[in-house]
Image (cartoon, rainbow, N blue to C red; front, side, top):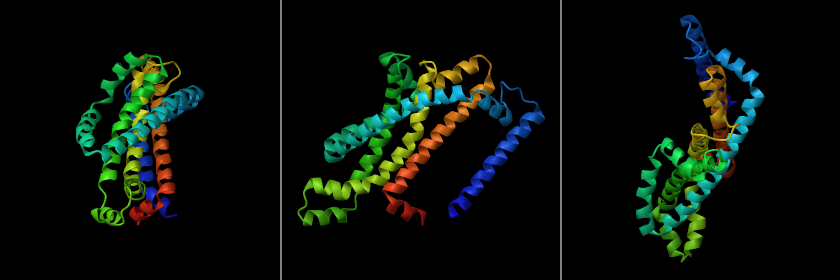
Length: 255
Protein backbone atom coordinates (compact mmCIF):
# COMPACT_ATOMS: atom_id res chain seq x y z
CA UNK A 1 0.00 0.00 0.00
CA UNK A 2 2.85 2.39 0.81
CA UNK A 3 4.39 1.80 -2.63
CA UNK A 4 1.07 2.71 -4.28
CA UNK A 5 1.00 5.94 -2.27
CA UNK A 6 4.59 6.69 -3.31
CA UNK A 7 3.78 6.05 -6.99
CA UNK A 8 0.52 8.04 -6.97
CA UNK A 9 2.07 11.54 -7.46
CA UNK A 10 4.10 10.36 -10.45
CA UNK A 11 1.03 8.67 -11.95
CA UNK A 12 -1.09 11.80 -11.49
CA UNK A 13 1.59 13.98 -13.12
CA UNK A 14 1.80 11.52 -16.04
CA UNK A 15 -1.98 11.57 -16.58
CA UNK A 16 -2.06 15.37 -16.29
CA UNK A 17 0.78 15.68 -18.84
CA UNK A 18 -1.10 13.44 -21.30
CA UNK A 19 -4.30 15.45 -20.81
CA UNK A 20 -2.41 18.72 -21.34
CA UNK A 21 -0.72 17.30 -24.45
CA UNK A 22 -4.08 16.18 -25.89
CA UNK A 23 -5.71 19.51 -25.07
CA UNK A 24 -2.94 21.66 -26.55
CA UNK A 25 -2.78 19.65 -29.77
CA UNK A 26 -6.53 19.99 -30.28
CA UNK A 27 -6.77 23.62 -29.16
CA UNK A 28 -3.81 24.84 -31.22
CA UNK A 29 -4.64 22.53 -34.13
CA UNK A 30 -1.05 21.24 -34.30
CA UNK A 31 -0.46 19.18 -37.47
CA UNK A 32 0.05 15.43 -37.02
CA UNK A 33 3.49 15.54 -38.65
CA UNK A 34 4.66 17.91 -35.91
CA UNK A 35 3.05 16.26 -32.90
CA UNK A 36 0.19 13.73 -32.96
CA UNK A 37 -2.27 13.73 -30.08
CA UNK A 38 -1.98 10.87 -27.55
CA UNK A 39 -5.39 9.56 -28.68
CA UNK A 40 -4.15 9.36 -32.28
CA UNK A 41 -0.97 7.59 -31.18
CA UNK A 42 -3.05 5.09 -29.19
CA UNK A 43 -5.26 4.48 -32.21
CA UNK A 44 -2.20 3.91 -34.43
CA UNK A 45 -0.77 1.52 -31.83
CA UNK A 46 -3.99 -0.51 -31.83
CA UNK A 47 -4.00 -0.66 -35.64
CA UNK A 48 -0.36 -1.75 -35.95
CA UNK A 49 -0.01 -3.72 -32.71
CA UNK A 50 1.06 -7.07 -34.17
CA UNK A 51 3.68 -5.53 -36.48
CA UNK A 52 5.08 -3.23 -33.80
CA UNK A 53 5.16 -6.06 -31.25
CA UNK A 54 7.11 -8.40 -33.57
CA UNK A 55 9.54 -5.58 -34.42
CA UNK A 56 10.00 -4.81 -30.72
CA UNK A 57 10.73 -8.49 -30.04
CA UNK A 58 13.53 -8.54 -32.64
CA UNK A 59 15.04 -5.35 -31.24
CA UNK A 60 14.77 -6.56 -27.66
CA UNK A 61 16.61 -9.79 -28.52
CA UNK A 62 19.57 -7.77 -29.81
CA UNK A 63 19.39 -5.51 -26.76
CA UNK A 64 19.33 -8.31 -24.19
CA UNK A 65 22.09 -10.38 -25.86
CA UNK A 66 24.34 -7.31 -26.15
CA UNK A 67 23.47 -6.34 -22.58
CA UNK A 68 24.48 -9.78 -21.27
CA UNK A 69 27.75 -9.80 -23.22
CA UNK A 70 28.69 -6.21 -22.36
CA UNK A 71 27.86 -6.45 -18.65
CA UNK A 72 29.56 -9.82 -18.21
CA UNK A 73 32.70 -8.62 -19.99
CA UNK A 74 32.66 -5.38 -17.97
CA UNK A 75 32.42 -7.30 -14.68
CA UNK A 76 35.33 -9.59 -15.67
CA UNK A 77 37.43 -6.60 -16.74
CA UNK A 78 36.64 -4.93 -13.41
CA UNK A 79 37.91 -7.96 -11.49
CA UNK A 80 41.21 -7.75 -13.38
CA UNK A 81 41.60 -3.98 -13.10
CA UNK A 82 40.67 -3.95 -9.42
CA UNK A 83 43.27 -6.65 -8.62
CA UNK A 84 46.19 -5.06 -10.49
CA UNK A 85 46.65 -1.36 -9.74
CA UNK A 86 48.83 -0.78 -12.82
CA UNK A 87 46.11 -2.20 -15.10
CA UNK A 88 43.47 -0.13 -13.30
CA UNK A 89 45.41 3.11 -13.73
CA UNK A 90 45.77 2.43 -17.44
CA UNK A 91 42.26 1.14 -18.14
CA UNK A 92 40.06 3.54 -16.18
CA UNK A 93 40.97 6.72 -18.11
CA UNK A 94 40.46 4.81 -21.36
CA UNK A 95 37.11 3.48 -20.13
CA UNK A 96 35.93 6.96 -19.12
CA UNK A 97 37.03 8.40 -22.48
CA UNK A 98 35.29 5.70 -24.52
CA UNK A 99 32.18 5.91 -22.32
CA UNK A 100 31.87 9.59 -23.22
CA UNK A 101 31.69 8.85 -26.97
CA UNK A 102 28.08 9.17 -28.25
CA UNK A 103 26.28 6.06 -29.49
CA UNK A 104 25.90 7.75 -32.88
CA UNK A 105 29.67 7.55 -33.34
CA UNK A 106 29.80 3.79 -32.67
CA UNK A 107 26.85 2.73 -34.80
CA UNK A 108 28.19 3.41 -38.34
CA UNK A 109 31.59 1.88 -37.53
CA UNK A 110 30.21 -1.33 -36.03
CA UNK A 111 27.60 -1.63 -38.79
CA UNK A 112 30.47 -1.46 -41.28
CA UNK A 113 32.46 -4.13 -39.41
CA UNK A 114 29.69 -6.66 -38.82
CA UNK A 115 27.23 -5.87 -41.63
CA UNK A 116 24.45 -3.34 -41.79
CA UNK A 117 21.56 -5.81 -41.85
CA UNK A 118 23.14 -8.29 -39.44
CA UNK A 119 21.81 -8.38 -35.85
CA UNK A 120 25.45 -8.94 -34.79
CA UNK A 121 26.27 -5.29 -35.39
CA UNK A 122 23.41 -4.17 -33.12
CA UNK A 123 24.48 -6.67 -30.45
CA UNK A 124 28.04 -5.31 -30.71
CA UNK A 125 26.82 -1.72 -30.32
CA UNK A 126 24.88 -2.63 -27.17
CA UNK A 127 27.82 -4.64 -25.79
CA UNK A 128 30.20 -1.70 -26.25
CA UNK A 129 27.96 0.90 -24.62
CA UNK A 130 27.12 -1.35 -21.64
CA UNK A 131 30.67 -2.64 -21.09
CA UNK A 132 32.18 0.56 -19.72
CA UNK A 133 29.46 1.64 -17.23
CA UNK A 134 29.57 -1.86 -15.74
CA UNK A 135 33.36 -1.92 -15.56
CA UNK A 136 33.66 1.55 -14.01
CA UNK A 137 30.99 0.88 -11.37
CA UNK A 138 32.33 -2.56 -10.51
CA UNK A 139 35.87 -1.22 -10.07
CA UNK A 140 34.54 1.36 -7.64
CA UNK A 141 32.66 -1.29 -5.69
CA UNK A 142 35.63 -3.64 -5.54
CA UNK A 143 38.11 -0.98 -4.45
CA UNK A 144 36.06 1.32 -2.19
CA UNK A 145 35.98 -1.12 0.69
CA UNK A 146 36.14 0.05 4.31
CA UNK A 147 39.82 -0.19 5.42
CA UNK A 148 38.76 -1.71 8.76
CA UNK A 149 37.25 -4.71 6.97
CA UNK A 150 40.42 -5.32 4.99
CA UNK A 151 42.57 -4.94 8.10
CA UNK A 152 40.44 -7.52 9.88
CA UNK A 153 40.82 -9.98 7.00
CA UNK A 154 44.60 -9.44 6.95
CA UNK A 155 44.82 -9.99 10.69
CA UNK A 156 43.08 -13.32 10.20
CA UNK A 157 45.58 -14.23 7.44
CA UNK A 158 42.75 -14.60 4.94
CA UNK A 159 43.66 -15.60 1.40
CA UNK A 160 43.14 -12.94 -1.32
CA UNK A 161 40.48 -15.09 -3.01
CA UNK A 162 38.51 -15.27 0.24
CA UNK A 163 38.82 -11.49 0.66
CA UNK A 164 37.42 -11.08 -2.84
CA UNK A 165 34.49 -13.44 -2.27
CA UNK A 166 33.61 -12.42 1.29
CA UNK A 167 34.36 -8.69 1.31
CA UNK A 168 34.98 -7.12 -2.08
CA UNK A 169 32.21 -8.79 -4.12
CA UNK A 170 29.42 -8.16 -1.55
CA UNK A 171 30.57 -4.53 -1.39
CA UNK A 172 30.49 -4.32 -5.21
CA UNK A 173 26.98 -5.73 -5.64
CA UNK A 174 25.11 -2.41 -5.08
CA UNK A 175 27.46 -0.72 -7.56
CA UNK A 176 26.89 -3.55 -10.04
CA UNK A 177 23.11 -3.19 -9.81
CA UNK A 178 23.37 0.57 -10.28
CA UNK A 179 25.29 -0.18 -13.48
CA UNK A 180 22.76 -2.82 -14.55
CA UNK A 181 19.90 -0.34 -14.15
CA UNK A 182 21.72 2.25 -16.25
CA UNK A 183 22.74 -0.35 -18.84
CA UNK A 184 19.19 -1.74 -19.14
CA UNK A 185 17.96 1.51 -20.69
CA UNK A 186 21.18 2.05 -22.64
CA UNK A 187 20.79 -1.40 -24.20
CA UNK A 188 17.39 -0.58 -25.72
CA UNK A 189 18.57 2.85 -26.87
CA UNK A 190 21.73 1.37 -28.42
CA UNK A 191 19.85 -1.34 -30.32
CA UNK A 192 17.34 1.14 -31.77
CA UNK A 193 19.98 3.75 -32.70
CA UNK A 194 22.03 1.03 -34.39
CA UNK A 195 18.97 0.11 -36.47
CA UNK A 196 18.58 3.73 -37.59
CA UNK A 197 21.81 3.28 -39.57
CA UNK A 198 20.47 0.17 -41.23
CA UNK A 199 19.18 -3.15 -40.02
CA UNK A 200 17.03 -6.13 -40.86
CA UNK A 201 13.39 -5.47 -41.69
CA UNK A 202 11.08 -6.15 -38.81
CA UNK A 203 13.06 -4.27 -36.16
CA UNK A 204 11.84 -1.30 -34.18
CA UNK A 205 14.43 1.25 -35.32
CA UNK A 206 13.94 0.44 -39.01
CA UNK A 207 10.15 0.53 -38.55
CA UNK A 208 10.25 3.98 -36.91
CA UNK A 209 12.52 5.32 -39.65
CA UNK A 210 10.38 3.93 -42.47
CA UNK A 211 7.11 5.17 -41.00
CA UNK A 212 8.57 8.66 -40.51
CA UNK A 213 9.83 8.73 -44.12
CA UNK A 214 6.35 7.75 -45.32
CA UNK A 215 4.83 10.58 -43.21
CA UNK A 216 2.95 8.08 -41.02
CA UNK A 217 4.04 9.93 -37.92
CA UNK A 218 1.38 8.52 -35.62
CA UNK A 219 2.69 5.00 -36.40
CA UNK A 220 6.24 6.16 -35.73
CA UNK A 221 5.19 7.65 -32.39
CA UNK A 222 3.35 4.44 -31.51
CA UNK A 223 6.59 2.51 -32.05
CA UNK A 224 8.46 5.07 -29.95
CA UNK A 225 5.97 4.50 -27.12
CA UNK A 226 6.61 0.74 -27.33
CA UNK A 227 10.38 1.39 -27.29
CA UNK A 228 9.94 3.47 -24.13
CA UNK A 229 7.88 0.72 -22.52
CA UNK A 230 10.61 -1.80 -23.38
CA UNK A 231 13.24 0.32 -21.65
CA UNK A 232 11.01 0.85 -18.61
CA UNK A 233 10.19 -2.87 -18.38
CA UNK A 234 13.87 -3.82 -18.60
CA UNK A 235 14.71 -1.28 -15.90
CA UNK A 236 11.96 -2.66 -13.62
CA UNK A 237 13.31 -6.18 -14.09
CA UNK A 238 16.70 -4.99 -12.83
CA UNK A 239 15.03 -3.36 -9.81
CA UNK A 240 13.19 -6.62 -9.05
CA UNK A 241 16.45 -8.58 -9.30
CA UNK A 242 18.14 -6.08 -7.00
CA UNK A 243 15.39 -6.48 -4.40
CA UNK A 244 15.62 -10.27 -4.65
CA UNK A 245 19.43 -10.60 -4.54
CA UNK A 246 20.50 -7.81 -2.18
CA UNK A 247 17.42 -7.12 0.00
CA UNK A 248 19.62 -5.85 2.85
CA UNK A 249 20.87 -2.97 0.69
CA UNK A 250 17.41 -2.11 -0.65
CA UNK A 251 15.89 -2.18 2.86
CA UNK A 252 18.67 0.05 4.16
CA UNK A 253 18.05 2.67 1.48
CA UNK A 254 14.25 2.46 1.55
CA UNK A 255 14.12 3.12 5.28
